[in-house]
Image (tube, rainbow, N blue to C red; front, side, top):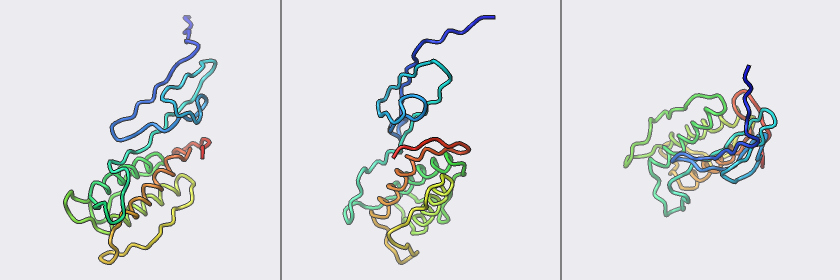
Length: 172
């Protein structure tokens, strides 16, 4: 019977895809560290997770300046679906359908994103977000503040240390 000899330390390197940024490490080594590398002493079985965050193309949405685009809803939909998947939910779909680039973004797209995000919060054991105003179809103009608010809730939920079926400590 041969014996496997492990190196005393294994170094992990976090590498984000095109639509994400590395946030921090969680687990048995480097917990909370924001360094892209994590040296893991191999003295026993270890569990280490690299945490990534969605990158939004328009970093800052300015009230009365930023034009609301279908892309803003697409990126929020992708980020929300990533979180929903992380917490054991399937993808959501908008009752209005996906916004079309250059087309009209309906208020129901915003409402559907809010519902999907509330469901992800419930699955993560987090309090449902409260929104600053009510959105009514054909009445409420969609504003940069609506999207900024959703992005903030996505970012907060990304920091939750709960995944489907398991629970780990979260770092505030």
